[in-house]
Length: 215
Image 1: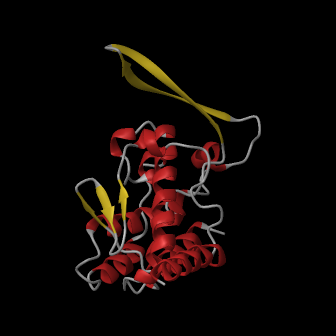
Image 2 (image 1 turned 45 degrees about the horizontal axis):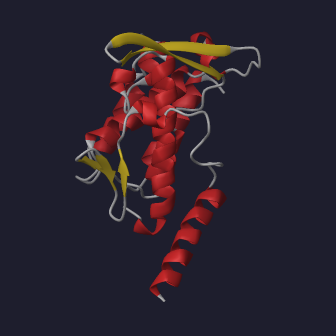
Image 3 (image 1 turned 120 degrees about the vertical axis):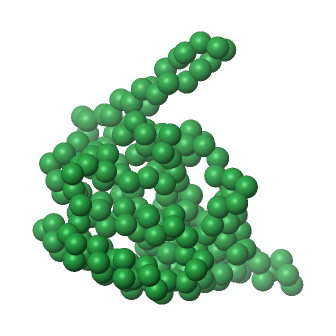
């Protein structure tokens, strides 16, 4: 897939979102947001930008000179000029960053992060204080790192609209603690599969358990 097609396809996905909240999918909304926070923590450590976590432009750290073409930006901005008021700037920005990521993900400078290589381990050292002394945390994990924004785009497509309040990310019927990047940094995925069937099953189990409890 070439650069042009990747960006066009990404924008088409954004423009297909209707931005209507769907409270019947709360369980998958929570799981997808938690998975994004986990992935963002992995990328923040790998790119040494943990101070920007949880919402940041991954592509800008890897390929700072890349910008989508004006025709792409115009389509995106026209779309966001018409979305409902509850679609926050954070949500809009993550969609823009998703489009940029789709534009850079095949570039050579990205390969060390996203290409599979069983012998390739990323060793990231982050500063942390312990009993008043400057210590070093060492994070070892194998690539490929996961797509940084896919959980959020799926979240939006499934009617997951959130806002931030008192260090929580709030949906209509649920809230996810913001926490810290260290609390979310883990190799294991929060969602086993990012496909419609698995996510629908999450929501179906939630509704079934809620119905049983109410009875």
